[in-house]
Length: 134
Image 1 (cartoon, rainbow, N blue to C red):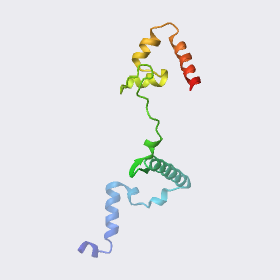
Image 2 (image 1 turned 120 degrees about the vertical axis):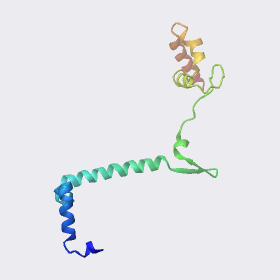
Image 3 (image 1 turned 90 degrees about the horizontal axis):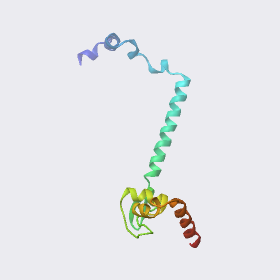
Image 4 (image 1 turned 45 degrees about the vertical axis):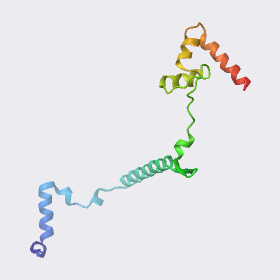
């Protein structure tokens, strides 16, 4: 408590800090603040608030049958796991890729499309016929 009784204590402290860390450490930060700095800061705040609102929107929970679920889960399309050709059910990622492009699993792609000449064209015509029927 004796050091705070000295009226010049703060002055001595500032001098010691400026001597050790430089004169900029004891200056008021407003001294170097400009209008362009202010605009840049406001733009950064806007971007940050937009990011936060987007994240909040994505993580928003909705009550479905008494259970809270993420909205993100409700908007997703269900992945097709059953091959319409051979009727097998698969969790294989390779099958997912072939399902989205050719609407069949990898085995059916090898059997019906890849091994035949003009297989993709024939398969696309098959897809069109099936769509016309539905």
